[in-house]
Image 1 (tube, rainbow over the protein chains, first blue to last red):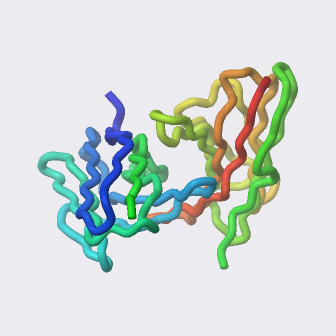
Image 2: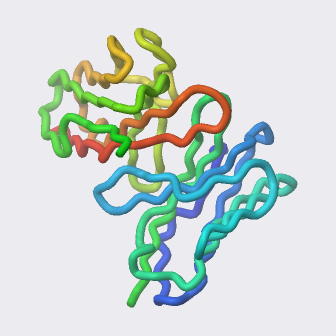
Length: 109
Length: 113
């Protein structure tokens, strides 16, 4: 079993829709949980991170961590075509990140 | 503007060739990483380095080696390239301790024929 599991999609939704991206993880030692966004032909960039359980909001983006069920979510409200990218969840273990497979998201105008 | 640069965006090599991928960061980061990215498999860690001349194996080190002679530079070496090493290679760096945002380079698309 991979340490971090993420549905690779692809996921295609209309502009304005609410998008939910999800990951599960197996290592209860993980403390930091991150979402990276990767545009086509670019390297990943950090979008958001949370520490331990709870919610964190940044504009149209909300990251949610439930450590009891080892479940990580990213919600995008009022999705825009510019949100089209691959989204990677990542957990930080001992000095290195463990990434999910990435979900390719397309927002259709 | 922080930066991680990689020597090539696209590279085409033949089976058996020795291949060097170079990565340079200008953020004075202690840690540097090499990943490969394949569809459906996500980012997989090949090697990482905590300091100059230090290296640690990641999850898929077979067929690769690395070199870190200077703090800002981390090289990935394919001793004898194979078609199975056709992939996107991403370099990243971060700083030591606590939570670390990793900064990535733009990637090198390597094709081995």
